[in-house]
Length: 253
Ligand code: PGA
Image 1 (cartoon, protein in one colour):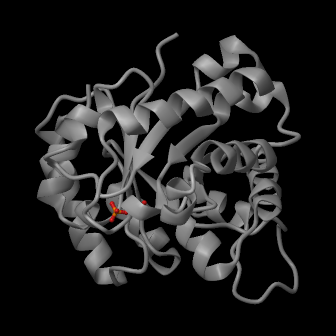
Image 2 (image 1 turned 180 degrees about the vertical axis):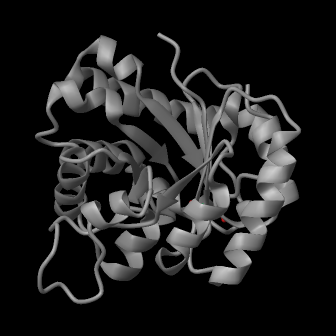
């Protein structure tokens, strides 16, 4: 099965509303000049989501949110819900990014609740997993990633599996300039796909795109995406610059 290639930008806590409009305009103009089969999206901060959707209208740029809460509404100060994102024209949402896990204490069980809420609607979830430096050095990468996948994706109905996107982001590679080698990353991607096969069957698992994230730049994106089980990239820092993000899209197979 051919999996779709996805190039996603995670802006994190960067860009005001005005800056969001400007960056998306710059990016969509550059993107219009290149021929790509990749699905392209950016995830601006929540306050700029509506502006981002508007600025991207009519272009190939999709808009994602960086986080979501599992309840549709109610007394949950500070949160944003699936129906709210859908009504704003958002198509994708990151779930369980390592910064959510390490700074805001998100657990695998919470990742699972969020995922199930998202699958109850129409958004495409991008579920992030990855080990810390200590975990890798202790030889626990497989165990940690396996737990994150098994718990994070538990009770997902097999007929929803085709809507899943995963992102493997080793925590030690995020924002550090230290990238996993393509071979190292692909090894973990294969391991993740093996778990997906066990959970959803070979046919479904084969169709799930698994992105790599962690210091992806124009210089290393092509060699990462050339690997058999790396189906795209999730880009932080380098997605804040229209030119470097366009170069990354250009290097997608
Ligand atoms: P980075 O971030 O590309 O800046 O390392 C990636 C991410 O956190 O998604």
